[in-house]
Length: 267
Image (spheres, rainbow, N blue to C red):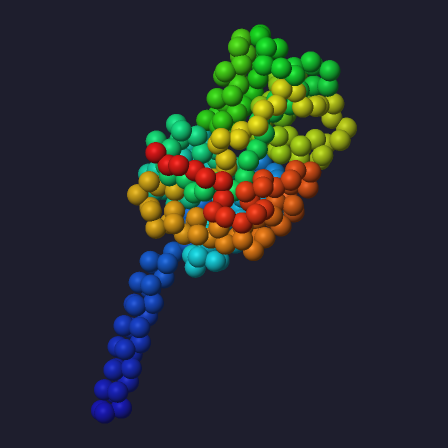
């Protein structure tokens, strides 16, 4: 009987321990990260794994700050709303920290600057802002490039859920131009050297750096992202990852010299 009592005590203690572990695991669940699958070199899917500059940097930050991440493919048009509502914990998708978007989510310090460019057929002569009257321009819905295209006088903007669809439409002649971050356009041209495309009108997005998005209420996560980013800048990880994924573009000086990253003032 004593042996049975001892056995039951051991089982009961084990059950309590397992319950405690379960509770701890639940509180330490992987954070859900919304990202895209088709925008190399920043964010893309390769051999079934989400990768790219943005996502590898976020993995590094998570490791430094002691949390795990689980990447989820989504469309850009709904990404920030999903972050704001708590369906996703972090947005990692070359998200420009614009004033309008700061009304919906909070942004980490910036980890990259980028150019917006119009990819066109070779010889299309669409190299300045006044050349787009009557032209059909494609852009990913809800992106900064969508807003950019809408400001080009006389242009007809056609919106797409992802980048691959727009490149296909440009190649078959359904579009006159495809508005994308320049690094994404460069990657596509590098991977398709025989396609007769070129860069047209291009501008630098200097005041709206790429940043990770979180819910406005999640100040603790925002602090962890900023702390991890600063550490990744300080030890050269940001510069290394940038060189790995952006072979033809230098890293911004603020990201190579140490410091907190490109400043973002949340609304």
